[in-house]
Image (tube, rainbow, N blue to C red; front, side, top):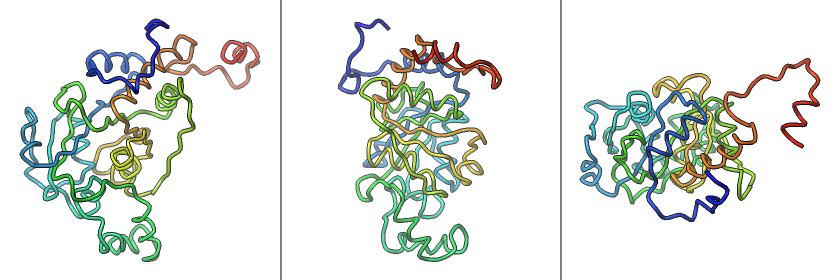
Length: 265
C-alpha cells in the first residue's frame, strides 16, 4: 500500500474485499483461529435466509455457537430458545435485562459471595438492548455469508493482539480502554462491541474456554469491519518500520542501545 493510499478508512462506504483483507491479516499475524463475523436479525426468517446456515438441534451457550464458527468453520443461526439460561441471550439482546436478570440471584454463592455482588456484576455488563432483535448468526468472514457482519471476532495471542491494537492506533490515535466483568466476559467483547460500536477486547472467561473451545493463550477482540480494515492497514505501516509478528526476542542481557536506536529514534 503506497503512501498515496492513506485516508480515513473509517469514512469509507465501499464494500470490503474480504479475501484481500483476510489474506493481509493472516500475512501480518499468522492467526490460527478463524476470524468470524456476528450479525443480529430483527426476524428469524431473515436469519434463516443466510446461505448454508445451520440451526442447532440441542441447547447451547452462545460461547459454543461462536466456537462452531471459529473452530469448525460453520455458519450457525440461533434464537433465544436455542440458548441455555438467560445470561447468554441477554448479552446479545435476545432476553430482557429485567429485574429478575439484574438481581443476579443465579450467580450468588457461585461466582460472587453476596447478592449485592451478583447484582453489581449484572449491572456492569454491556448488553444489546432487548426488543429489537429476534435472532443471531455467526460465520467465518471468509464465507462472506453475513456481508456485512455487525462485528468481527478475532482470537489472538497477547503478542498478536498488541500489534492489532497498535494498528488501530497508527492513525487518529486514541487511548483504548476496556473493562473486565470477570465471568460473562462475552459482555466485554461481543456485547460491548454490538452495544457501542467500539473495538472491544476481552480476556475470555471460564465458560468461553470450557464450552467455546477458546485456548489458554487467546484473547478476543470484537470490532467492526471498518475497524478491522483500519487495524490491518495500520499494521502494514508498522511492519515497514520493523514492528511485525513474531516479535523477536532481543535478549535480556544484551546492550539495548542498538535495538532501541532502530525502533524508537
